[in-house]
Image (cartoon, rainbow, N blue to C red; front, side, top):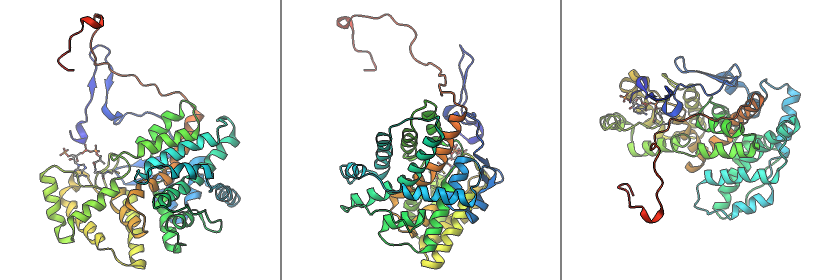
Length: 396
Ligand code: COA
């Protein structure tokens, strides 16, 4: 089915219309993020993403997303300080993580550990502004610590404690790699977090809002969103992009690969987006970040393959409005930052927790529990029969 003729099913009895995936159906009102998919523009709270990525830090952007305004210098200092003070996780959480299977997926480890925070901070007072502030600070502070902790635990090592003298992104890279990162690497990573922090009502954010609408605690909200992000149709496409670039191998084979993929109706990873008909504005910035890293730390030949693929796709997929999306260059950036491939989606979660929490607050501000209707397609009323009289039906 093509984009223009997505399915719409009308129920004969009730007249209700069902659109699979709720495509094009507004499910909420929001003042957090705006996407112009034809112009390739993205803004958070009315500020262009380009400006935020160029001039702000991730924590500054997080503050903007969650509280609606850019922080003053004092507000930012206070927020950074609070986050820094709450980076550590309880030894009980670390001990729990040591019991996780070392070959388990880091997203499953993150979902479980995020949910466990609800046990440690069990007071649920979601109409208390101080409770909301504290929960925001804890989640923003502890999610990176838990991602890094599982990385070391699964290698049989003890997690590294956060370092108070390092800023948010530098500290995460330090906890992950056990080395103090180069300032350029930290700045590039921080900008990646800004680019991934929010993207309107995607599947995980919708999941967060549905969970929030039951008035449960924010740890459950984030845990449900992490679980949703873990699916391959949402997070994770950047891992697939690297696998595809590996398979192509060299730049001169990119056009042939593309032709073969199109002939067999295979999707080209890192291309296409439900919202964009032009190159994803995040991909534009990520490409420049990748180039900055290559200029400083050495070229990656996989980038030549990616560029050749993008050029070849211009004439083949461009006319259908299919261009590189956020995942096309992000994997190349993370690879240069020495982030293991199966941590790409947890890194996405570190960023997106800002957006989820912004939507949590917005949902609480005008809450109505999500309870959509359905179109029943089951059997009409049937006669019950005693157990001994039943025969197997054709379908069992
Ligand atoms: N490669 C080749 N063709 C693609 C394509 C891709 N990556 N993405 C979409 N198309 C084509 C489809 O084959 C279809 O063609 P048709 O109309 O001739 O049948 C048309 O574009 C519409 O595709 P559809 O799957 O309906 O678009 P969508 O808006 O529902 O899908 C994605 C959006 C992101 C799911 C889809 O583009 C995709 O699977 N991309 C690859 C995975 C990826 O990079 N995901 C990360 C998203 S951030």
